Picture 1 (tube, rainbow, N blue to C red):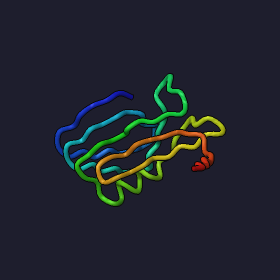
Picture 2 (picture 1 turned 90 degrees about the horizontal axis):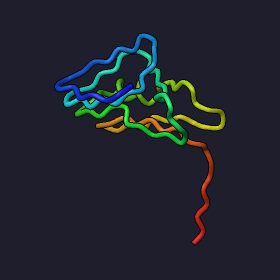
Picture 3 (picture 1 turned 60 degrees about the horizontal axis):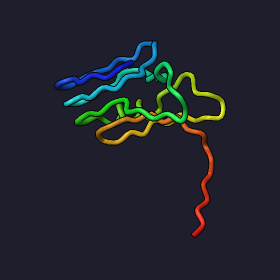
Length: 102
């Protein structure tokens, strides 16, 4: 929980526990293990939070982030981690459909 900045490269090894912070990495981010996430205490849904920003991440790191397990998602909501070449963001929303008529 919380925010921090890391200068240079960073390897995050998940060996249990759950992550709910926001890290800004100026270099390459590497993730090892199964990513477990949780929402910060007091978070309300819908919820959105940037998990990591980084200068680069390899394909296996981006895959590990995109398939993260999110704990504590309320019934009727869905967790999704959106991963780009420079960031990973967690969103917890109620799935549904929107019809736009013009």
